[in-house]
Image 1 (cartoon, rainbow, N blue to C red):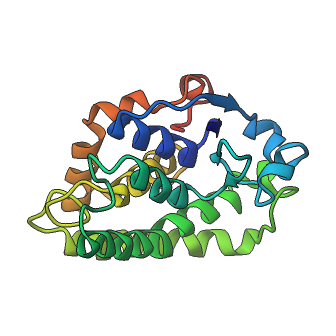
Image 2 (cartoon, one colour; image 1 turned 90 degrees about the horizontal axis):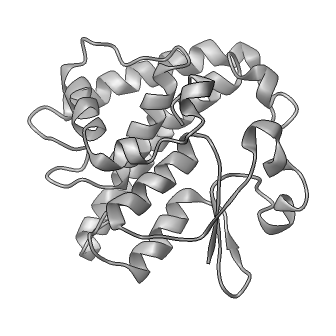
Length: 216
């Protein structure tokens, strides 16, 4: 297997997952900031153009982060970051869908359409007028999540899962590009500090993060 890696919140989430699982995979760097992921030969392997991607020994390439995690967890069940039972896996997938649809996709597109427009305008469809509204939606849904998290340490009750990795890497990146967590959201703020204290959170930061002044 070979992992295609780069700077960015989703590749960081991949590295955090691997650190939590103690999995090591040979890695090839793709220069996301230079747009290599939107050009051949990378697009020949992963036509979606996203990073990270996992190339299997048979040459097939998996190009969606959560799907890569699903594949690796089947190969390496412990520790379970999706779930050890059908019920646990369903519960985690439910929260992953809620986090991505309500918060992270709005945060990412809010960035792509505003502060990140120069970087993304020739790579993906961008709607600059939508950016501010998407950011407001993300903040409103963080407030919604804050109310649900009273009395629990992680997004999925009683378990650290990929839902925490997804939201942590997004909100840590977003804080550096103008989308900070409202400090009045006590439950989400405490969760963010709790996840940030895990060794995998620091270990997963890309070496270029300090130079770029972005957490990816």
